[in-house]
Image (cartoon, rainbow, N blue to C red; front, top):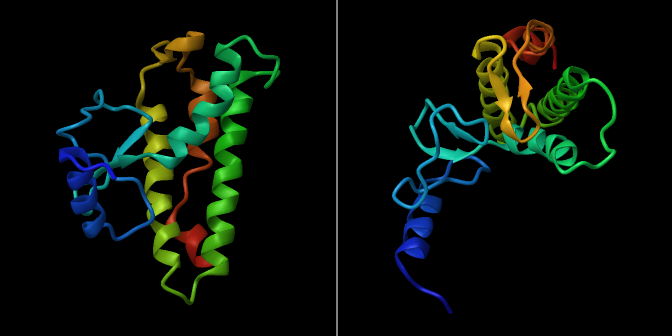
Length: 157
């Protein structure tokens, strides 16, 4: 068995977890400001791994490493990643609306919207993904604005 400060800190953080998420101990890992990979929950202030940012990083990584997948316009590729997540979240909210499991997906709505807004708020022509030198642009911002999950979307579930 392994014991040490990091394991003890992780155990203590897990004891405070309310949602299905991976909490980050800032004494061990201090992320850069406004990172797409991390999300600070405004409800409890905990820093956690951003599931949307991690999922979004996957197709970007393929491009960065010179793979053929995914082919096409990066705005579309990124927008489609968000759209797929949006549909999954809303489907699960509908599925679990009368259970306590719904809290997990309502939390993911916050992380989803945070990630959309993070990209929307980046000034045009600023690099979003350094690996592939992909810059922020108005087309991507408009695509993401249309994908934000609002209360009306949740009520329709």
